[in-house]
Image (cartoon, rainbow, N blue to C red; front, side, top):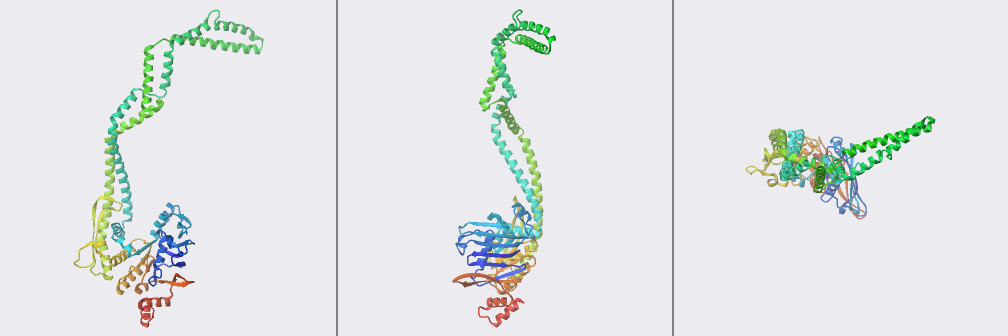
Length: 550
């Protein structure tokens, strides 16, 4: 509920600070006194667009603050999602700077205008004759039916199924599109894959082939150098091994003459063993080296194949070719197994569709069950508001497609007079009739869900005294479970308020100011008498005013 409203430097308002209570509050004042200005200021702090022209003093900023008790609104999740500090007593603030920039705050935390507007809609419902157009919208009409049907949880379950259904539908569509596009490339991809598979690729093979090619391509030079090395090592008189053998024998004789000689002997022994081993390996390599033109041609062909494949696929190595081959294998496999994947996804979609259909059917059944009650409530209450012949034709029928609200088409038709054809509200109902219907619907909704603070802005315009009295009673009854405001010109409505405020103009320092004050009992009597009979307060008007308040 709205507990306090402060407006500074807005239109004709210099500084107004007003506390409010729960229950039913009425706001009165002469035409042009500034009631619409007050409502305009409130709408700004609820997230409406600002205008620099709204500043009373163009050199100072406009500040509007609205304090709310939100303890009953279950808004903890909203505050958490938007990274805001939750407080039961929450303050919304809007600032309009002389530069025409606007700032918004919730509990002193800066917020975007969109967040302020979303929060504002959950705190205050401003209802005027202009807002009655919502009544003609199908979504709003369904919301009314669902409130009576208690479909809140069922709709949450349905929307969860619908989200899953749409996700799987999108995945199935993507698969079908992939199949259409991929099948065009399938033959070419299969050819490329087979070409790469034929190359028997493995990591490191290029380096091995290049090394083998170098050996085979230089076999004569290798054999020549191996033979030369073998000769250097094994010549009987001048060979390295013969000389090392002499050296080994000499140092063996010195090894007993001290540690230094023994150490040198070990090193010579080691050199001899290593050199002898080299000689054996040279012999083995020499025996194994032979010219193999056929193998050379094969290796050369394999290397050329690798180079061609790398050039074709713009790859720099066999490792990259292997990655390309794996990617092609996945594409080819995806197409070749597409039928199975499509069938699996279609079965998944069918299963989810069945759950979604069942959920939508449950919602439809609940809606149809409360339509007779809704028609009765509307018609009975409109009877007391001077519309004795008003009747409704409300039907819920299955739709061809899923919507966020279910799978229904709602027909909500109205006839104001006997013998008059039924038609959509926006075509057959007048503005005054729409206002009365909306008032009744809001009063019905108040019994089924937690509504925000309700602000009725002159919805009683153009109605008679008896009807306005009944409208006031309805608003008074609504205020037993919620906070209700009514900006009104009718004393019958104004008198029903638990508290009454007056908006008025006064001149100070050559300037006109809009003010607002809470009326005490005597002031209420005079205000109501003036609304009944004009500025000259007659005894009959005063008596009538007292009677209204009683």
